Image (tube, rainbow, N blue to C red; front, side, top):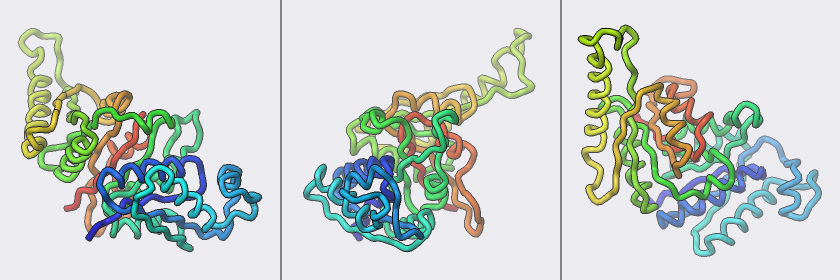
Length: 287
């Protein structure tokens, strides 16, 4: 089955940028593009989409939003195979349901405000935490979303993220950019560097374990792909957020626990979704 790249559209500027990114992702893969507008409201009131469709804001309907998004995608990639759907459904539920027959979901980032570092909106967060396939959440400003920088992979514990590793390697290969795998490590709280006989012992062991985790995670990555491996001391979230500042994409895994409800992201994925400076791909890892 030729699964599509799925993008959620709500008429906002962020979602229209998500359409641009999704069209690029579909073109890279030779895949269809599927545009979905999901809302329990019949009308959308917003100035940006009203200008796009040439109607007063109070007269803009879901199909108008979809038509505008379709025109935008076709302007960039006229040959894309494209389908659209307007769903009378809650947005996050509708997108999660549609993700079961998609290869990738792209969503915009409608943050709460600039003061809180553009904290992620509830729909984007919910989709990233529950989708059945990888999700790219657009982070950073408009100029960062087009950056063709390296792909950064956050490497978790040993044997805990094969799907994320595969996805990151495929993304780097598609874009012709290097893959940088990063593993954070923490100095044991009880360690000390004050005594010459104790200096570096516990910390060195932790760093060595991180290096071994990198080797294990990347053992099946194709040899022809340019790759770099780096360990860094610190909280995993902080290390990855720092790495995202000059990256094109940050990839993290999210363990899905069968039979469990609620947001299934993990602290690291949750943290980078809120604070990363580049788009973040969340890849589900199932038990």
